[in-house]
Length: 458
Image 1 (tube, helix red, strand yellow):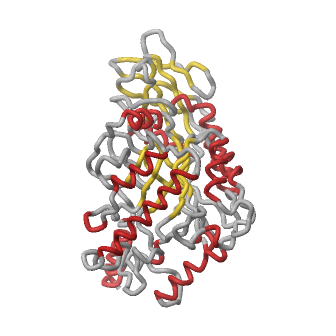
Image 2 (cartoon, helix red, strand yellow):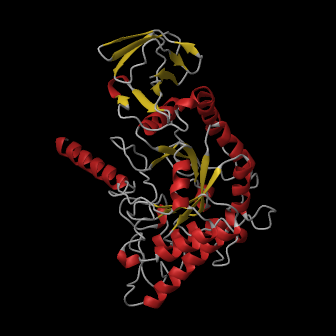
Image 3 (cartoon, rainbow, N blue to C red):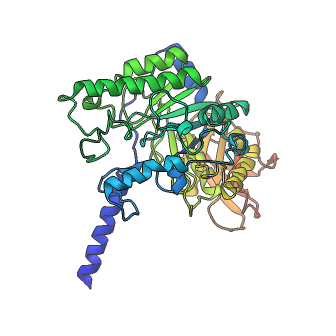
């Protein structure tokens, strides 16, 4: 029995490690952009703080993990009795079932605006290669799917237009690797893992065709679908020397059409990773360069059949910590197969938005401050740009504790004779300051408020 338990623990640890291999950490180095238009736009983006990342595609039909089940990597096995090659054909065949009959991007945009989000990133194409725009480069696209013939079949156009109408910055997610393309995964050869499956040195013309394919798609997206603020490039392994897709050329095409475009060549350190994107994690310490945590509202990027949601209090806590450490939060929300944001997600997003309506001054257009946390008491600080005001956010724990709350912190002390204001109530909070330590008592009855935000005049 003891041997079996030990073996089970080893197996569990192995599975956890394999799962975590999918999580993309930020790259180690940052190269600041030098183009004035990009520098200006990046500074403006840092004021937004809160956005949405929407994964949508054929995987939404089945309610399964996006793209990854068609790799043959050890960390994931599809929930299927089909042989691997048959499974891939089944998966790609889901495009014929992709028919969001209630497709309503205006609902998406309105819900995300109610949530207090300021920018969006939408999956034009994930690793599986299914294009959500009417591309001329492949037939594996939304206008050749079960959605073909719908007045809004060129889906990407309507998504971007709906969010622009609500005042959002628009971001285009694009996968550099494309597992459906014969120039990347050649069907004459086995697909061992996520990478291209043929030796480029032996078939250089094939890889050249792939580069032209990718550049043509970027040209369509950047020229034909209105103003784009962010090009969010995923698939960081497709940037190694052996998978060179000529990023200089790709970005030149994109920025010729979209001057000042922020390019996020995520996890690939260099001049085209304009900000870092740690995935499902928050950096341990404050970072000085621009960055964004991308994290899901559920446990999955796309819609799944039995989602496990994070609470509004938890998301607000994540947002407060991210902002205090100098970053932004990009929250993953997946539409349903019918083309809507499901009710449970709407309820939670609206609750987050109600908190931001009252307390957003502590989040939007703030900057990091040297004393940014009292982690023991779960306090996260930010500052106004003029450095005359400090904000303190105390997120609510996931509990119903209704007792009065006494907290204290060192530094960030209010100016003598000034007030500490509870942003939600607009009322002054009683406090004492001694030996550079400020102590306040918050009244009982705060359970359900999702957290308190304070305005401190320096």
